[in-house]
Length: 115
Ligand code: HEC
Picture 1 (tube, helix red, strand yellow):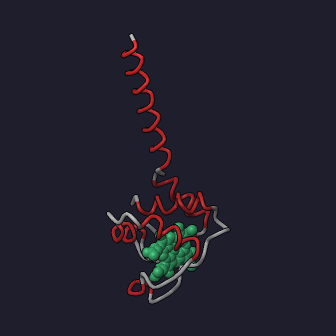
Picture 2: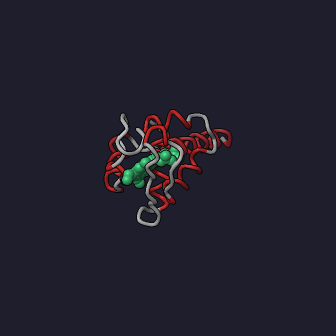
Picture 3: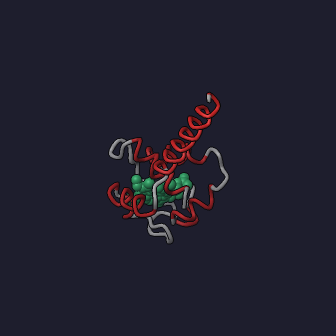
């Protein structure tokens, strides 16, 4: 009966992994609520450029780019310009660290990249 226990144990472990992934990726409502609360929506929307680029354009640009997550986390923490000059006319993105926590900045970047 050891094999049966092993199988049940593996099934339970797999279920845990699935639920952890689900909670790590925020849904649209949740992501927008965090963005609202963090002040991002003054300059961004999902579909269109406001002051900063549309977040779906950001997601499209970095699709398949393995280094993008870390790079964007640094950008949101420290601010900066130059990546979207053709869209923004060279306006800088303000720095968000430490007024937004590292955890929330990572969650916001994951949300943007999921769009
Ligand atoms: C005052 C306006 C403003 C606010 C507020 C703002 N942004 Fe931005 N954001 C910009 C601009 C302008 C750019 C383009 C910067 C560039 O050209 O490199 C940008 C770019 C970005 C990018 C793409 C960066 C890149 O290098 O491709 C991400 C991701 C982003 N913003 C996320 C956020 C998040 C998350 C927040 C809230 C915590 C936020 N922004 C708040 C103006 C803003």
